[in-house]
Length: 397
Image: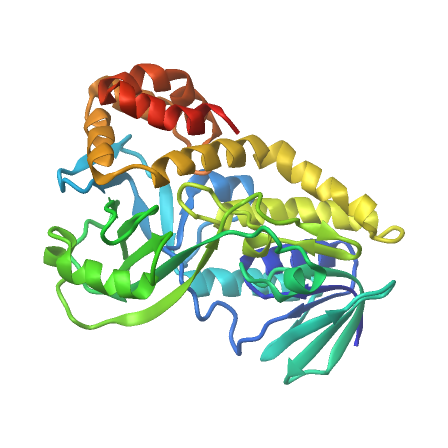
């Protein structure tokens, strides 16, 4: 087969960039290893309302719930609730959402190859995507877009993963007693070191998951369900559905372009550093990728031309990535005792007002900047030793 663009991966970012380029008149092939777009998925499936508006994606039947509040459970198990009383985010059916984006890509003119896996690349003036599966053995193309997840084969074959860093995650669905408009977040080094666990109602079922910087995420998840003092009482059934595990990439730990190659979505590490959420960020960056690709394909899409993609991403999200990574470094180093003190701070009315005034579900940059400005004052209540312990990570890149 021959095409202008071969997109490896039929997830949200791959289909979004495929649709955008097909609409511009390019011949696009999307390679998807599974027999159905959207399955399997290991994702909390939470996306901000503002981000969808920005991307011109209208909510449809794939919306399973509307989130208005978050309840944080620190290691002390003393909950902190925070809300502005309005809908901040949707809980979505990821499979249905992904299939809608895939249908739009095909309607725009892209060719979808299901049950077809990329097994490697042959690089040259005309790259060749080597395939295994139901359709064909290779695609000769002008541009390869890797949308094949955190451990991207495209990125690996081009040598773009040399400094990549990941967190491990696991999730299942079950029956639990959780408010439909509430995301519950649980913190503790015993079950989610360096990250957190979550309970979010999604229709009739509840998504229960966690991320971790250490150990096996699936083992930690099953232990969390049984031993967490609060979560274990809310989970009403031993029945488990849609159990899965995966990786969450850290942004800015891999290159996202090379000669005739671009990466989008999780393959590019385009996720929020603190939460690991990647739907809005991945789609937004995929939109930028399409704009740069269309211009580069007027000639040869060399690394020199595709560098504009990285520049566009950094212009829009660079500061947010950098500040988020700093905040994550601090968070990863916090003991359970320090986490308890931080959440006690969040109970203060002035701190809650500061957060609510500056919080945006899809763009954390404004809140990061305000908290950095206020950090010395806020950390003072934690004690001098703790301030010194964390300040170098807060104020140094």
